Length: 436
Image 1 (cartoon, helix red, strand yellow):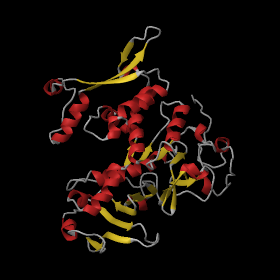
Image 2 (image 1 turned 135 degrees about the horizontal axis):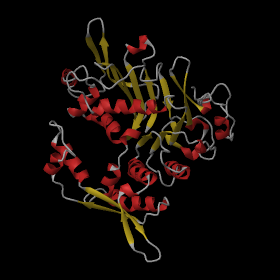
Image 3 (image 1 turned 180 degrees about the vertical axis):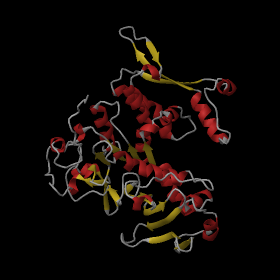
Image 4 (image 1 turned 120 degrees about the vertical axis):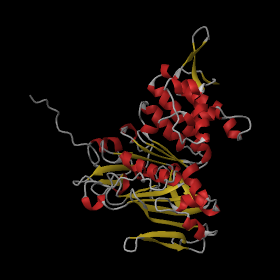
């Protein structure tokens, strides 16, 4: 479970900003919190702010962190970090990323700093159950020394295995955590798995129904809950009032040579065989949405292209949503409301915040412009976050409960207050005029 995320000198973030899912001492909507040891964590958090204020950049920052961990760079390959460009001093400094999270019964604090050329610093601390919250086990620390042009290492006694060999295999643009997972260090692999298996990030550019399709194609040999996923997703689509009676998945034969000949599809030369097979499997899948005519009861099959954007969007989210709940994942979604009616968005959030449905500790962090969700019956004040740029173009991140200028009252009409500009983070628009 995600506790907090820190990011600095990345895109519109100059000074380090922190998104915290630690609940405040407020007792309102206690069901929106999860007890995790001595901490109470929020099940969901929504981020509001004007266009270009940094909402998407916050989610992209965690996506970039995950990408660097999961997809180690090749020798000489640049890292996908972008520093704050509006200040010459910061544009030459590394970007920083740090996540604190629970995995199993252990709290971890992991982070790194990086430029496009190299990993500069990296650290990992653990807080096993039963230890004081303020006393960490140092597993490793790594720091690049500009004067000597070398990396200084510090290993704690709690990290087991062949540490020196792993260090030698960690080149300048590779994370020690990634190298440890690649070479099967048990402790580091466990930490790595939180990023690869418990963290799901959905960006507008990453919109794809692949996860939902994979769950619909689950076989009898797979986990029990996956065998039921077809029924669950069908149920979600029917209850969403799209007029859909069911979903049909069928496989077709694909002639790859014909695809390449027509230039409709072509693999890069270095594409791994495993990736080729997965792509081919998805290309061979055909989805059909079943509508039932009245009063004859005849089934009519529609392709996804014949459905509305909202139907396709909800279908894309159905799989990740179900997977997050069943696996206890942390889900981040940018532009959650895109193409969806506010009632549907609210229902998706209420599923995450339901004590009866979400029993595995799934969390949701989302960016949105949908102010109808600013409802004290849906969210606590500490679940609402804002992004706003200062006079120097740097993003400031703050929660409604921490807002200093005018602290919101319990039960306050949050939507009305936000639109009235009481909490900041709204666009200041000048009248549009056509000259000439």
